[in-house]
Amino acid sequence: MKKPAKPIANFPPALPKQGHPAPHGRVGVVLMNLGTPDGTDYWSMRRYLKEFLSDPRVIEIPMIVWWFILNLIILTFRPSKSGHAYASIWDKEHNASPLRVITKAQTDALQARLGDEVVVDYAMRYGQPSIASVMDKMMAKGCTRIVAAPLYPQYSAATVATAIDKMNDWMAKQRWQPAVRVMPPYYDHPAYIGALTESVREKLASLDWQPDVIVASLHGLPLVNCKKGDVYYCHSHKTVRLMAESLGSAFLKDVPAVRELISKGGAKKSKVPPVMLAFQSRFGAQEWLKPYFAISLDELVEAGCKKVLVVCPGFSADCVETLEEIAIAGKESFEEAGGTHYDVVACLNASDTGMDMLEGLVEMELKGWI
Image 1 (cartoon, helix red, strand yellow):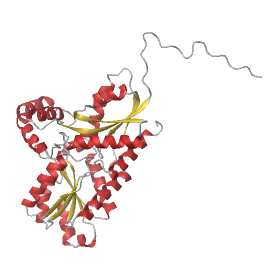
Image 2 (image 1 turned 180 degrees about the vertical axis):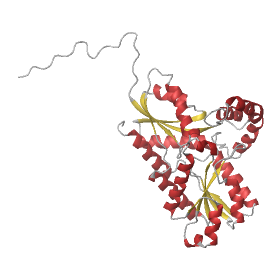
Image 3 (image 1 turned 30 degrees about the vertical axis):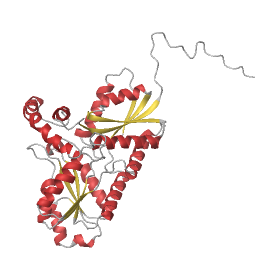
């Protein structure tokens, strides 16, 4: 009979007197979004805009030149204008921007779905809660494995990359670094395309009028960024094309294509209006991705399209760009040009459809960890 192995002396070893206790091996998920000011007043807006517009991932011009433009011109006038836009959509019940309120709701919903086995929190690239502060909280709760989930369907250096940069800045200062996985962009994921399609269909069913065209508006990007290698335009193009195909509709890149389809009677052959791509939120004098959303609205009216439905497939949550620029300013501009019917599809936000998609994407990154 084989004798039992002798126990190894002094095992497990006692913690050295000068040692540091290892954190418990929990798993965390950090939902990352762009950011939000703390208020609509001048100084809150100025702090937020200064952090945002000082990011070299966002403004890719020599910083020596940009410093003077930013601090002497833009930060003098822009905070008041931006504050007015935020004030028009501010969530007074929570005294916070809709982006923060919705991202918090997404976090709570995901926490409920994943259970206590996973710690879920959210962070903002600009403003509060900062990425560094949330990563500190994760480590304090014993999370040694963390999934970073940027809530941007399409990849851009000005969105996904800068959020990961900020997380890596925090990582570089840690003696004990957690293991980190980054959720990839989901611009063409079947679950995302399906969720977008469902949200558009639900909106169409709720209308008592038929749109002449569905405009898919995504946040713009300077053209030079794409020429340098940013894949954002390709991702945006594919998202809208796949959504149109899923809807059973024609995908059109610009207003001339819409005009041609209408002139040939092609728009009447489909039960679903054609889908057109556009880009919003242009800033500065340089050329950005086209077609421009604001200009396209006027051109659509000239082409005979006076009934428009807008969907924003580049945003995971409603924010100042969707609620003020698209829903309020866009409608005013369209009606002034002669349009008669205008509505906007809500972002997926914390809806059941949106959370089903987000839960599935996050669970893929958690495989092997829980």
